[in-house]
Length: 272
Ligand SMILES: NC(=O)c1ccc[n+]([C@@H]2O[C@H](COP(=O)([O-])OP(=O)(O)OC[C@H]3O[C@@H](n4cnc5c(N)ncnc54)[C@H](O)[C@@H]3O)[C@@H](O)[C@H]2O)c1
Image (cartoon, rainbow, N blue to C red; front, side):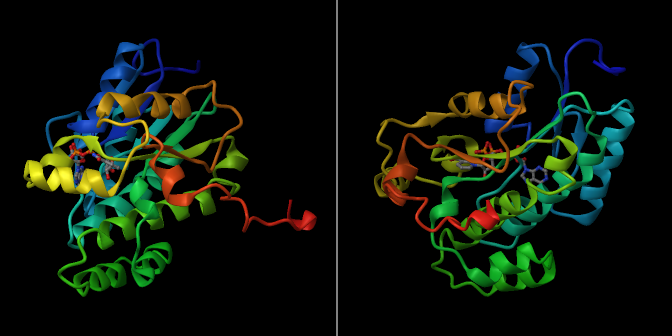
């Protein structure tokens, strides 16, 4: 282990660490001896608003100050489930800025990065929003979300997460990430009992959403059910997996995508 700012253990940045999945991840990592730098709007080590350019610059400055010898892992987890443009600002542009901004601070020993997307990557999206995100055009993404029809309950959220998932697959094999020895993977939860899912929802509303998205393993997930997948992707033990999305959704993705998800894959040996 190179020079360390916090004694033994790896130094991991977790965004959205004040609540839900991020808080459960931080708790688990601390219990196993890691040093966690929590990032959120308030209430943890670094208070920034990842919806803003200022906040995205501030997270990098703050982590550099707190961990001048560098960090070992990033969990880009902060997110919102809303119909408005805050959804793309936080879930796509805030998450990607966190990963890209903090990547140069990763140390050489066993650097790892994890993006929290969602099973919602499988839901219908607005292609214009997704393409605007991937083009890095936040102004266009925001105006397209603002123009979505009022009854589009999940479109902004699904579009922000689909774009993030596509960014991951596009980015993980590049020189900056895989070429620098940094595995970059996503965890895509199904429905999890957190403030995000219960906030502003009646029990009947929750039951309706659950019925529409069956999970073969049954029941409802808690934040702690998502943590092992995040912890594995972060661990030095993950030496050969990158660019992957692991659905932690009780088997829901298998129902939605069915059996042969590889049919469209490149078979051309020139590309293998
Ligand atoms: N709960 C679920 O069912 C579920 C399912 C799939 C994916 N997810 C994803 O998991 C991640 C965590 O969600 P959760 O369920 O724990 O929700 P949560 O609301 O409990 O936690 C999200 C955290 O992100 C923080 N955050 C929001 N906007 C921010 C901003 N602008 N700047 C900095 N921090 C900000 C919040 O303050 C909060 O602490 C999100 O990316 C979410 O989309 C959740």
